[in-house]
Image 1: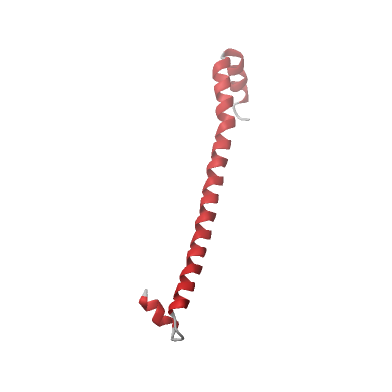
Image 2: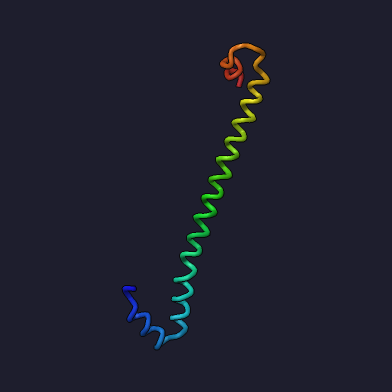
Length: 77
């Protein structure tokens, strides 16, 4: 640790500031990890939703298509 001497000095001279420094140094990585996990989770849900909607849309287009060319059904949308 680059500031090890300074942190030890702070621990001896000002216990309250040392406690705040420790709490920030432990909570910051946790907050960042939580934020990244939430972003990844939301991205995965979005991709699943898009795939589901695409599947539903293709099923709808297939039901509109009465044996003709699929491009005809697509121009309808």
